Each structure stands twice: as structure tokens, then as C-alpha cells.
Length: 53
Image 1 (cartoon, helix red, strand yellow):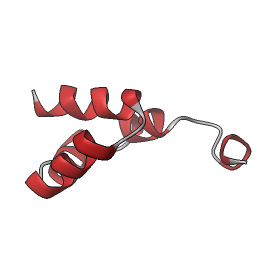
Image 2: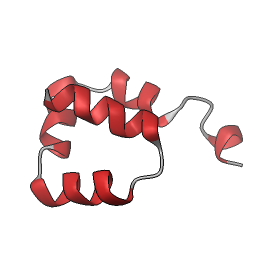
Image 3: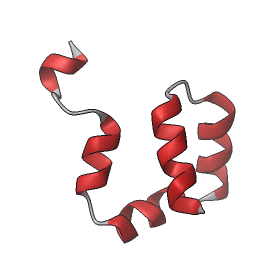
Image 4: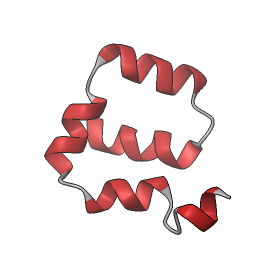
């Protein structure tokens, strides 16, 4: 269902957005703790880590 509604991956969608906007969105400590502790999509986690590096 998800693939039918959104043909691109979440990471592909994030890459099309303004990088500074995405960095700001993922820079919060509580967001990062939740994502890295409980996130199940390794591709998203890796992309966020690359933005924070």
C-alpha cells in the first residue's frame, strides 16, 4: 500500500527537500534519540546520520 501511494522511498523524498530544512527538522535531541533507539528503517537512520555529520 505504501509503495502504491508513495512511489519514492522516504529518503528519496527527503533528498528532494531543502537540505537545511531537513537538517533543522532532525537536529532535535529528542527526535534523534527516538529515531536511533526505535527506528526500524536503517536507510532513514543512515541518511539522518549523514546529515548530522
